[in-house]
Amino acid sequence: MVVTHFGHSCVLLDNDGTRILFDPGTFSNGFEDLRDLDAILITHQHPDHADPARLPALVAANPGAVRYADPQTAKQFAERTDVGRWEVMAPGASVTIGALTVRGTGGRHAVIHPELPVIDNTAYVVDTADRTGAFMHPGDSLYIPFERIDVLALPAAAPWLKLSEPVDYLRAVSPRVAFPIHQAVLSDAGRTIHNARISEMSPAGTSFVVLDEGTATDL
Image (tube, rainbow, N blue to C red):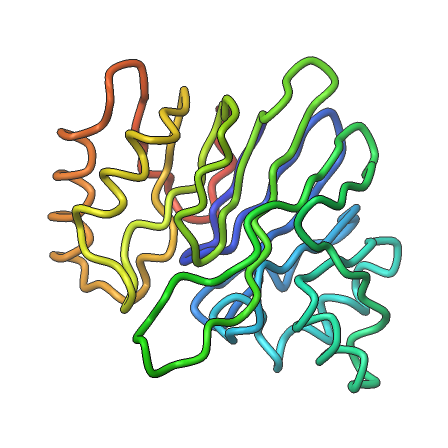
């Protein structure tokens, strides 16, 4: 499985020629040049996960890509004329994309503040032909899937997150490999501190790796 991190929560997954892009948002860069995508998946409506300005061009440049989003985001996109048709991926749904099976799970964004509405957030679990739970992108949630996950995109910083929470989440999921996402809200110094602490507190059997942005990495 080859993973490319384009910053923040934007991740390209490439497995046996099937290419799936997750969360092309405002804090990410480089995804706009991608072509020949098989799918574009969005976890939730916040612009740092779905860039309203660059999304139309990405969709136009990848006409063969199927597009899935959480229920609320899909409904919002249906009111636009420039982003094409988006299907709903709700918790419990699944779809076959090339050689991969994508399953929706979770369902709710993490609580930012009790006074703010909690929005939809679909976490995605990807199965390969020989590995169930080969990859998981939880979006803005700390949803525990209660199944074995091989590679986890770990939300590591957010306005709704304190450092102990990604550590506890990583221990609860206990994947073979985890890499941090959602860190554009941190300074370079803050990112270094967060990643060092998460690394030293990772569970036994989990390899915590920081991906170079824009570089394809075989995990």
